[in-house]
Length: 168
Image 1 (cartoon, one colour):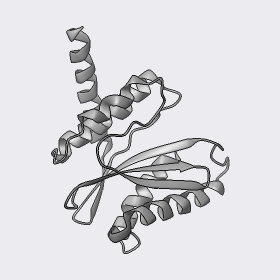
Image 2 (cartoon, helix red, strand yellow; image 1 turned 90 degrees about the vertical axis):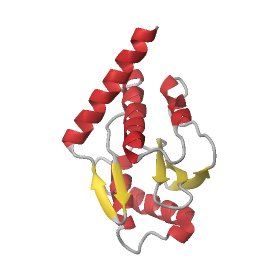
Image 3 (cartoon, one colour; image 1 turned 180 degrees about the horizontal axis):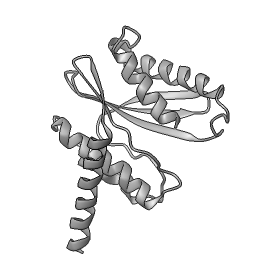
């Protein structure tokens, strides 16, 4: 999907001088635009009028920064998130899980939260939410979660669902 390509391109750009941490907004928007242009050349091209949203957490910066990147056709908007954001299908209750994000959460908990948000979104809206990819960048090292790590995160999400269901 285009979101996956953007995540991979973003992670790769952070390894080079292409990404300017002094101007995160412009860097995110430039990368999203470049990926969109590349995706237009694909066969079949991406669906028109589809809005894609990514949350990008710059964990290693002081202070940590959470950004929302919205891509709609050839336009992209990057904005910092200072407190709370709601993204996704308005009928999807999982969009409120972002309330559980807390600054300085350990990266492993952040990965579990991100996975649970995406997987719960797929469970409630399989046509609107698809695929799980988690990429971290630490000290310039890009790490794409392996199939084994993603399977573990899927299992943890299922356990959380089962626990929640037992409570009600």
